[in-house]
Image (cartoon, rainbow, N blue to C red; front, side, top):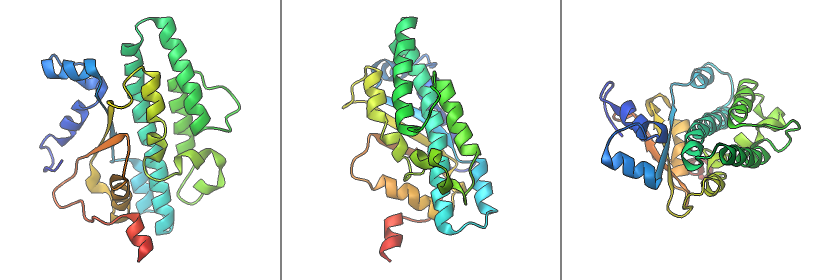
Length: 231
C-alpha cells in the first residue's frame, strides 16, 4: 500500500482489523465480520526498538535477530487484542468464553513460555508477559535468556505457528479463515530489516497475509536473508 504522508494508509490498515471493522454499519463489513473469513490485526513500525537499533553498537546479525524478536513480540500482542474481540463474538455465554480463553491461554503459554512456572490466567496477563520479555532484553543480550527463545525465531514464525490452533479454538474454519497482519510505516525500516519481510513473503505456505503500508520507493530491496547467505 503506497502513498504519501497523510494520504490515508494508516486509516485503511486499521479498518482491516477485526475490532474496528465490526464497528462499521456497512453491509459488506458486516458480512466479513459474520463470516470471519478475513481477520486483521495492526502493527505500526514507528516503534521505539527501531531507534534503539539505530543507536546500537550491535552487529548487523545481532540487529536482524533483535528486529525479528521485537517485531514478533509486538505482533503477538496485536494478535491477542483481536483474539479478545473474537472470543466475545464467538462465545456469547460468559462461562463458555472464560473456559475457551483459559484453554487457549494455556496452549499459547506452552508454546511461547514453555518454562513458565506460575500460571498465566488470561490473555491480558499473557500480553503483559510478552511485554516484560521484550522490555528486559536488548540487541546484545537476547540470546542469554531462555524466555526469549520462542520470539527469537524468524520473522512472524511465532505467530504462524499458533494461528491454526487459535482458529480452531475459536470454532472457525481453519481452511477458509485468512489472517491478515497490517504493517504500517514500513518506510522506517533499514534494508536488512526489509529482507526479513521479503524472506517471509517468499515462503511457500503460510496461514497469514501481509498488508504493508510504506512511502513510494521506500521498499528498497527484493532480496531475502537467504540471498545474503548464498553470496
